[in-house]
Image 1: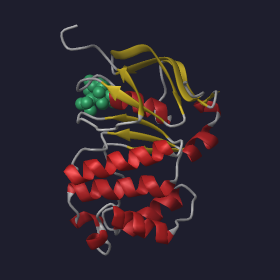
Image 2: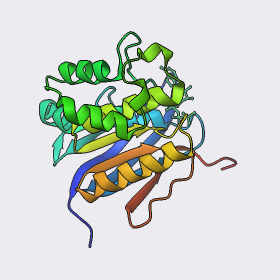
Image 3: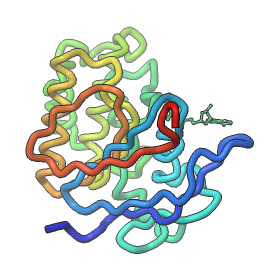
Length: 214
Ligand SMILES: Nc1ncnc2c1ncn2[C@@H]1O[C@H](COP(=O)(O)OP(=O)(O)OP(=O)(O)O)[C@@H](O)[C@H]1O
């Protein structure tokens, strides 16, 4: 049985510079489902994710959240969605906890400090709690950004290459977080060039751009 659509895209067309990356792209995603956006380098995966966040607009078509175009449901949509892009959005001079506080403040939320600290520890950052982000490794910064995703409490996660820079334990951790989020009825749209193990998870896939040699 398929669950009713919560996030959907209809006839999306995306252009970058003078190049059309894709046309007529559509999908439906329900609670507890993960959409894997697939395609080679430069095919338009990040461009699609940016359309889904509302950070950029399609040439044609629309993205809908609970049946309403996101352009007309901005407040609802932004309250329900969290985006993790290539850049982690981390402030260099702030500690991991201060970063989460800052991020929550930007979103107009107050941070549950105990939850934030336990989330950082869960993500393996227990020994970095007092360090400014500038001295953390690439993978540790990625973990801080992932902690921000968890403390934001959003229903929809849009994740651009969340596994980049993570070691095998980090990848397993993210797989666990995805399973938990989906198990609670959350939704995920993500890209990854790395294999994911998500047994028992409802995964949909969409291909962006042309296949090599096609
Ligand atoms: N602002 C821009 N102006 C012109 N072209 C752009 C712009 N941003 C992206 N592009 C081009 O659009 C295409 C798609 O880029 P995008 O980042 O969406 O690809 P991707 O599928 O996410 O790639 P990767 O797997 O390498 O991350 C690329 O050819 C890129 O050079």
